[in-house]
Image 1 (spheres, rainbow, N blue to C red):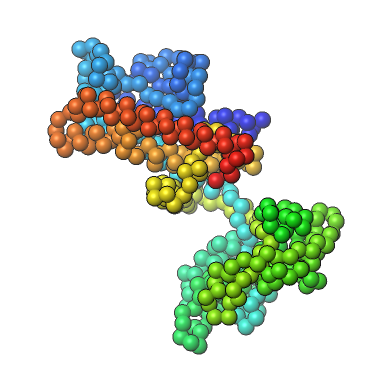
Image 2: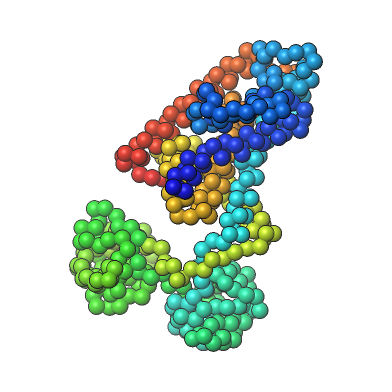
Length: 454
């Protein structure tokens, strides 16, 4: 029930955040707001508060804030002329236009911060494998050790351990590990430069030979590949290959890679039972074949790793200030990825089939809510960022188009030609409707299984 409510509420919530930005700034600048609507069409619920009618309308695919005198042909009483939208100087109109996207860009900072305060799953700093002869091995670190502290700083996640090593690449690091309930203090030296004078590999700097081991747990099985044909299923745990025990995904993948077109016996744990399946890896071109000693072809069976088991995770929480800083960083990070994705669409580097519309938003929102509140909040934050960035595109009828018009008026010091403005808005509306129809078409194709989920 909660997931259904979250799915239905996601889009109206995002619209509310956007329109609230317009509403608050318009009111602060003395512009009269006549209507605040979530949705389009006939109202399902309406209430007047002060001088504004607040309503929830029948078509929940957007919303709007109706301001006094926001169209050239609007009739405005003489006494109210100073509160009409189009009577305002360009900078005020630009501030109102920018406030909606700004609200969508600020909200993710707070939503991400809430997620970080509630706690996000993070890999524990457990050692799965120690490379022989590495700095970690010389220091006495062993498999199944858990890092507790580094240079006196408490360490609770694998990411924090890697970060500490990376930020101290040439210094010995004092490491406290927990082993069989006891804490041991060790010193891990920095990796020595190779004899050939090359730089130390980034991976060696980040781990110093103490590796996290992802278990050989199958997450997905690719159709029409050897694993699917042989009967391997998601959730299978690979115990051994050709009677050779495999304790990590990397070890198993190496065996498959080195045996193209060679039958392999997979010993698999499936729930409470164990089965043995023969798989013949498909020979594929080796992308590293140009390197010395690399074969022309390698083996592939068509499986991808699943999520590590829950016992390998810890719930990592941040305090309010750290959460706010992390939320800001994540907002910038995700925003940059969205801008990059838009650029790839324009350059035809990403298929237009990946565009999603309201149906996909509702579908994915329900799936994320079913996984938990933090997953849903994260998704809402990402979609809010999308809306904020897309609304800043300089397309007439979008907020970015209004900002462009205000900038032109500010530079030329004269109002835009009403006829040109009306034509531009009609073209912008046509473009927006076309994009919405195309995105909805993609949603339907995904829903009936013709297009894959992006």
